Image 1 (cartoon, each protein chain N blue to C red):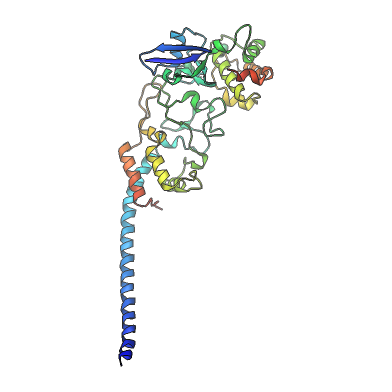
Image 2 (image 1 turned 30 degrees about the horizontal axis):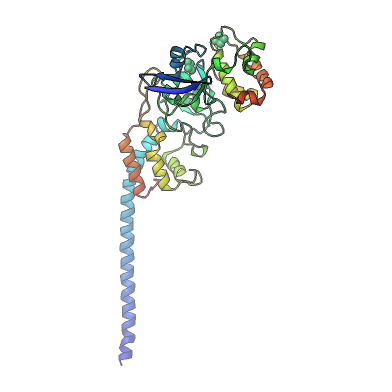
Length: 202
Length: 160
Ligand code: FES
Ligand code: FES
């Protein structure tokens, strides 16, 4: 008799378990969706802020798609026929460091920062959409094998990247235009975007 | 502030108020080496080209503080009448200069190119020798650069 009662109880427990599991799955799914939606809204905002800086000529001028660095806010081809060269730093004898040093030069109006040079050709951003830029930036096969953590560091700590907020003066003594958001807001946006999962809006 | 470097093989120290002063001004006005010229002052013409650690540098756009501890060579240190550098020799053979003002910069840029590329093609010359000559001596310069390449034993350009 005891054995028979047990036989009734087992399916009941099983049924209850399935019900609970279904409930839980639905909750989890809903919760996940809710989390995902919230993250996307948040990260999209961070993304847009970050991209407002990364698509500014101060950044894009050194991410050319034709191997010719650009100059100025109107992004004209670099004077004197300067090109990428073999190592992203110009030609053999006339290279970036012929004129650009580790700091801006206020006497000549020539900008400068550590390791002045072009971003690698695989990081050609000129003409790309924000989504395409972010996709290339996060793609290990194009970003020099960098992990998201390393990209975050590059974006927020590399002195050449941050030079965009200290672009110096031109030869006429006029200050160069900076990206549309402050350096602090940019760094906060980049960090926020990565913390929210680095979701690239499609 | 005291800044020390080697110039044309000699140790040199300068006392300077603003370490961002262009090396060109120090070379010309403090060290009285007038061969290096001021043309544009904005790294556009190349008249001020000299060598820092064997690299062509536009000294109007090079803060003297960056020269600390380095080897600087100006046109005065490249060669002399008795022992001209192959580039100077070729320049003489082809009677390159007209007014002459831009020539030290071109000669220094060419010497730096030959040190890295002893046999430059016309394309290499177009890419690397981008100084400006208002007298337009470019055709003679090109010939002289090829001649300098012929005259250049690799040991000569590398012993700076
Ligand atoms: S004077 Fe330096 S490049 Fe013209
Ligand atoms: S020879 Fe006159 S500027 Fe070149």
